[in-house]
Length: 208
Ligand code: GAR
Image 1 (spheres, protein in one colour):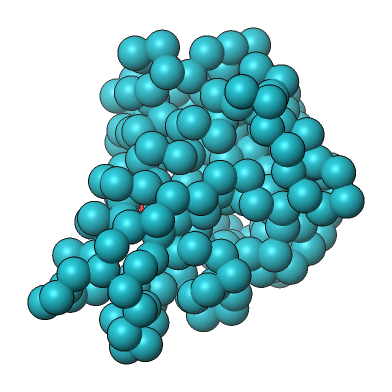
Image 2 (cartoon, helix red, strand yellow; image 1 turned 90 degrees about the vertical axis):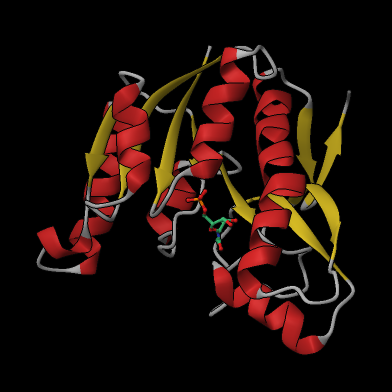
């Protein structure tokens, strides 16, 4: 069983998709050990508690420096025996000490087709605003490993989603979640947990 730690900042619909996929057997060989949020009022923490999963808030506000916050976050993951860290809408930059402790063992869901509409400043609704402002006709989502950059790590899975006439950022966000994020994040976790994913020279191969 691969021990998962899920990091969240908000509503937690991607966390819910993971939990549902575990329940219905779309994800196997995984146990969700722990959910951590940087935000005390994240509804994602409620979702975890309802399932009897340990749910904790570790916020930068509780610490004197950013460095201490980072150390506390990493210490909690290591102490809980977490083997794969899943960023499911975690809107905090991942520090180098975490990437070093978990090389190619941290994955992130990003709501666009990387390398478009990603990097510093592109998170949450801002991504979909960028897509609409540019007039792109296709967008989507990407699951990737986390390295020291922002949205620069090896790409595991991607799925395209159409942009439609009259879309608002909110409408597009919902379609990208439903058609792409909630599909490819559980799928990527299942592939990793079953030993199907390898990384060579910064590129991912998948044996289905
Ligand atoms: C999701 O759309 C996720 O892709 C995005 O935040 C949202 C969280 O929703 N993540 C990023 O923008 C990361 N750069 P959720 O809390 O309902 O899963």
